[in-house]
Length: 457
Image (cartoon, rainbow, N blue to C red; front, side):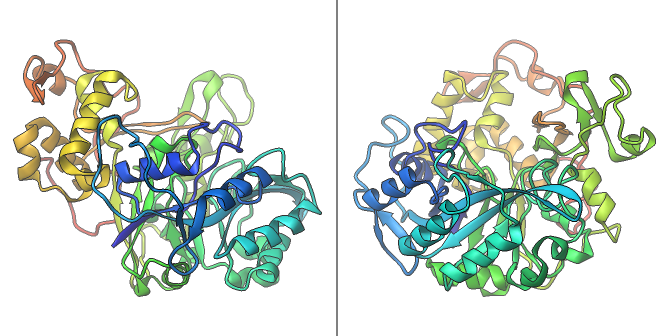
């Protein structure tokens, strides 16, 4: 088994951390427990030079760092050792007019060699500016981009990115299509996988019969290395490009699972208008004809509404050999909820580092560590992870670019534990924990698991 995050960005992309270099990504992959990282942004000449400087071939179609003797991401903490490889990737933003509408589509491109990356980049450089951003914006039809990939890389492939995001995606409410075939035309058969994005999960996507033949992948789309793995993929195939591609074409060949956000946390899950503080469920939006009740301007119609619009059934139906789904909350967010502080505070950083030192990696804690073992460190943390693993979370949906909120404790539960030992001698703060806020649902939406849950742990 290995964990892969196949959508990230380099420092050459806008609003991306300068720490997102290959060494920075490598160090944080060890903390997270990730074995394979997409490079992102190979079309940018500066980043491609960085790739050529720091990478050397490893397994077929994959690369490793030439020098893996690097300082750890967390001072004084050495996570458990494991192979960390890189897969060449890029994200392209296509903005063009088709069928009478302006389309804005993001696509992920994967290739096995730096020579393939250079060849595709050269073709794109002749079309538009690939140097202004790590994710170049081109007036290139998504179908024609796919044709270039197929022509320049024998084994390269393309995956539509975060397919439901309103503004820049295949099915987005603002600029997308209703059918994949309307986007890729005669080359549609060459698309075999789709990225679900942070605001949807497989259960939502499997409401749409037209997506039955596609494999669903999940990735972080991170702009800083500490955000690696907030969504990811788990494979049981050989660690090489060609085996991974085969597993994506047919999950029965080794695509074992995906790691998901609870989709309500995604910043486009619900409909709304952030400037007016308006957040709406799909039925409410339909009654308003997509118009904000305060400013009378169009609402940003989110992912849930768009899925419902294209859905052909009421319950998800999973193809044979579909990957298992793990819906998780990033560990810093769980610690922050318990400590009633922000996830980027020193208090949380210290606790996080000590947990990594003890258990080896974040994914080992979230996915694998038995409850009994967690209880020896912190019964409160054990309760939080038990609820998270079972889907018993409190949800407030994100909307119009604002992240939602996922919590594991109801209002008052943390306050009741104030002053008690949390872990490593740190006590739960003696102040009221933050409540779930408005519009939070204290029950799970239908999840990917077919089992029926009737009680909360």
